[in-house]
Length: 167
Picture 1 (cartoon, helix red, strand yellow):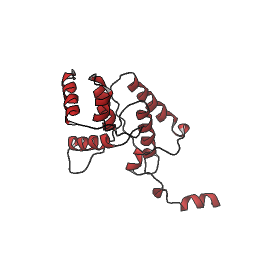
Picture 2 (cartoon, helix red, strand yellow):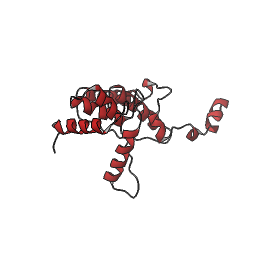
Picture 3 (cartoon, one colour):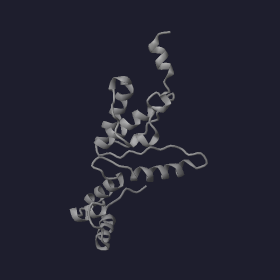
Picture 4 (cartoon, one colour):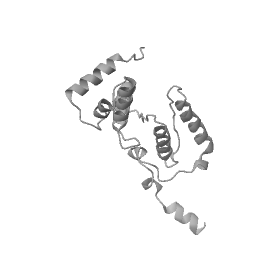
């Protein structure tokens, strides 16, 4: 066996594999050609979001250390760069799928996005804009301005005026 192969075998790559929390950090590198078909399919799905298509769910399977977490970090970065929202749903033993989804969605809303705002702050700003509220209310409700009782009441009145989708 060559010295190079022996050196590679001696490495413990489990120490290098990113953790779940690292999905929310920018990847330090990305090689599109590493998994070209996967990258192509994911890019096509992400681009579809920009054209108003329904949200996409992707199941990522692979052996430990194969780059799944890095790929998810790259997907998150791509989705958020297109003003989308990213949620990582991971079932938790002992809870129902819905309980896990609610917890992961809540956690995802509190995660960061480009510009230093949380996804929740971005969402509240989008809602304020959709309700036709001014920048003072939008900034207050999204955490970039002073939130007073009056501004919150104005936001809630604007929210009530929206024709939200019904099931």
